[in-house]
Image (cartoon, rainbow, N blue to C red; front, side, top):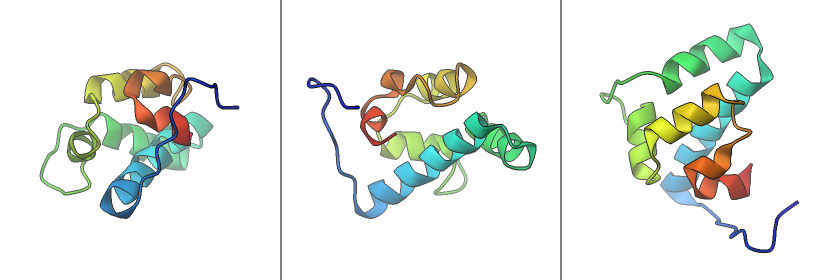
Length: 91
């Protein structure tokens, strides 16, 4: 349930796609299926910047702090997304 003071952001185009990639990775880690969680966690903790869909590139394009997203993944895998900004509204 959305609180009154929360803003809802609608993402479309490229920002919507990269947000969806990040959200899927967080969901994969949260659900704990080893087949999905291990590669998703490795992607989240990677420092690679060579690919347009690299974790750090996605954080940059969404104006998110990678460290805050990583903390969220570690501390409940998506349950603390208030730390990472607007993604709260679309979880």
